[in-house]
Length: 95
Length: 95
Image 1: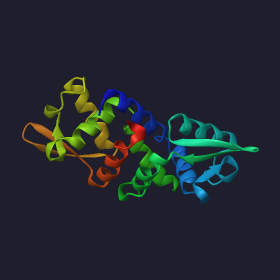
Image 2: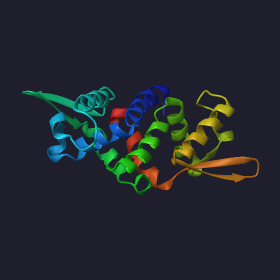
Image 3: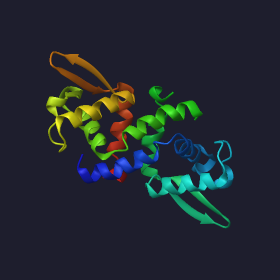
Image 4: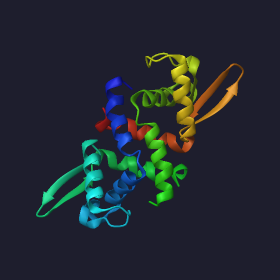
């Protein structure tokens, strides 16, 4: 792994290194249709502005993509990240 | 994903959220025999004490296991982490 590759991947891991952000990532990944807006996420126990802030951080790290439709911005997991993360979050060590 | 699960998984991601630590993790995972001691790692550009420090942090996060044999401590990737991480680190988005 080169230093440049490590920089990019470490930024992604760092973004997931916060329990609230990780739960939001998981909520987007597991939401119906594979996408979610702030309006869909209410069970993580933080306010909507906090949810918005964290979703933006996840996007900046390359983990989510976003699309505005009407009033809301919809987020989905970047496809190349999805399979690997699904496996990772389902592993016994993380249970 | 429950709050408790998120705490454990976020700790693992956080440990990998540093480029040097990530390269060390990758070096252990890809080393011959699937294990490495500090003596085996010389190409990440940091001193042996720094390598030791980071390997301990990765162990504390549950990503590596260790075994002392003679003078050296040998590290290997926790088996449940290995498959998922291998896939993750090989994905196009991290290249």
